Image (cartoon, rainbow, N blue to C red; front, side, top):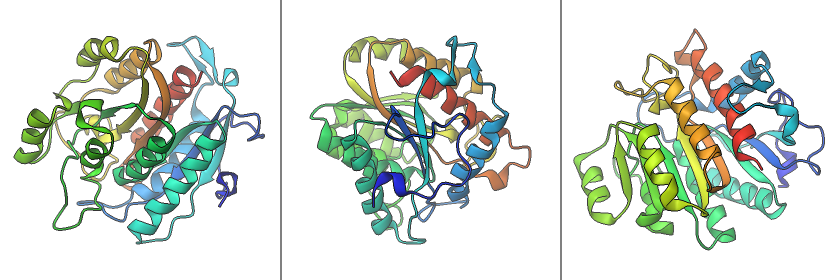
Length: 290
């Protein structure tokens, strides 16, 4: 499957009509086959696109407009319902083609397991890269109730793939005791509870490096983002997550791709969760796509 063949219904605001001229490709990953609590994140990509039409095209944070960035919304990858392994294989193949075409991949999930095949695709292209992981949950389990393919495992898999010393987690406030013990002993970098302040200290340490950023919307407190499958009290504000996105944008790291996952619109009749997600994606496009 060529990456431009994903189904295109609604598109993210100001999507460019030409994939050849684009610098970035937005793609949806509508998968929630392994969630441990509430399903529904497979509907996240479509709704985020729809509510993006309410965005202003100008960012007062970055003083840029969406016309400044050529990006193409390729729609959703047509994943086979209920088949995690085949879905993972398809996502890896899809993202590999985006990278081979020299485009910046920006994924919209979907559950957090969708990041795992993206990591694998990046690992084939980049010998050395770091991951910035912003999330409420550690996602460091080896398995969930005997199943290694779970949305609670992608960061553990990332540590095993690229080395734990190259993984930086922020905002973590939930997980098994064993996960936090692994973080202490493995050499990975985990910051509990906060995002922006520890990120300010970390970014100079990874200056000049290729970095992939994965954001789980549940890093936000449920007061700011109730529309997610595994909401966790005690989170950060939308303002702090915007600050984190801008800190990365204004740093000297080279962002090579990103994803935003776990928006489940059915649990948020106010739609503040997909509305916030669409704004974060706008800022990611304007700040990270060079």
